[in-house]
Image (cartoon, rainbow, N blue to C red):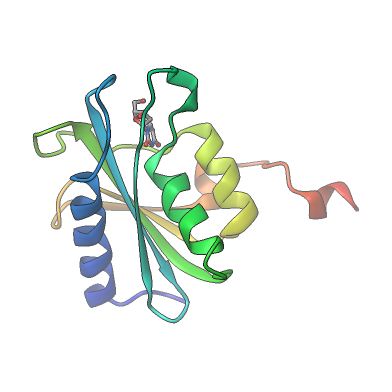
Length: 142
Ligand code: THU
């Protein structure tokens, strides 16, 4: 299911807004994510760090886990943006490998992932493009 241009705009703007809630006293790198369900609801996520560094959670997983823990299972798009905290993103922030694996598991390989630099500068990928040859239980069972 493709998203409309209006939906993409609100998803991108929501990811940019979510970024402002990041808790990043260690990396000072703020990431925002927004996940749209099949019926158009949007769940936001930001990265949240910890003095015990490895405990940090990425924005993408925050958004996905928030949605799944509210009973959502069908998603049509994810938007991600990131950059130095307190400034506008200077580059397209690409999801880390762990988040790509979570997307493959919970969002499906064909879901679009939009990398957002600003509301006007957006690049589209699919989960499959971001994580080729992914490990999934359904493959394992064959
Ligand atoms: N980060 C994300 O939130 N998402 C990504 O896809 C890449 C990295 C966060 C983790 C950490 O808080 C900060 O960015 C620097 O790595």
